[in-house]
Length: 253
Image (cartoon, rainbow, N blue to C red; front, side, top):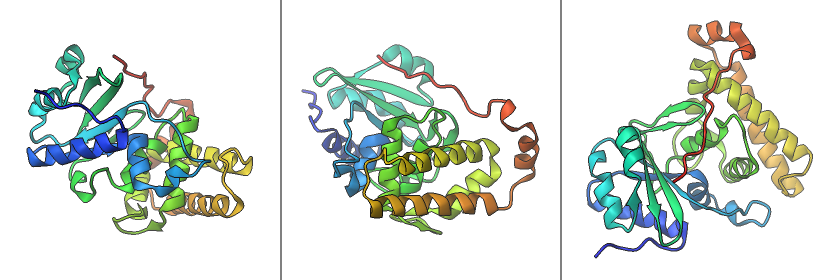
């Protein structure tokens, strides 16, 4: 008899990651649920939000067993989507709770491409703080939920030049210094966040607002000052008159 998904998405993420580990499947959470697991401030009234679906990243090793694993855990695979995209992304559906699980295969692909090879083992049950930040900050059409998630991460995690329970400056800066598109999208979203903070639209108190503001500004200064690659400089000549990100449509069952 197949298992039943947990009602609470935070519990379900941890359940799937733990069970996957025992079966040799490396799964890590991303998205809003993962941010909430990593950041206590997600429980603040100003930063609380609803979570409709679950997002995961799986390692390539054992990815061919994902369909069977999720069926055993009470999910229905989207067979057509998985047949067409299974080497990079798969979809599963929890009929009981009417929600979707989106599983990326060792690479997050939305507005920009983020390789996660070698990074899944750095944290558990979610991606690292840095990778969670990048999966949100790379969204060209940043919405309210994404802005709240970014503010939550910045409120709870400082900037350091190492991996850990922090935003790894060297990692983020290195990505942006090599890729003009990443640099530009993050820069735009940093400006958006600063604007929301200045207008009081994130609902944070004065101290919280100042802390998030200082961390955004410090990150942006570090990005600006980092030496850029030749490829970055060549792309910079084209500027924003040529689209630098992928347009993404939500994939729903």
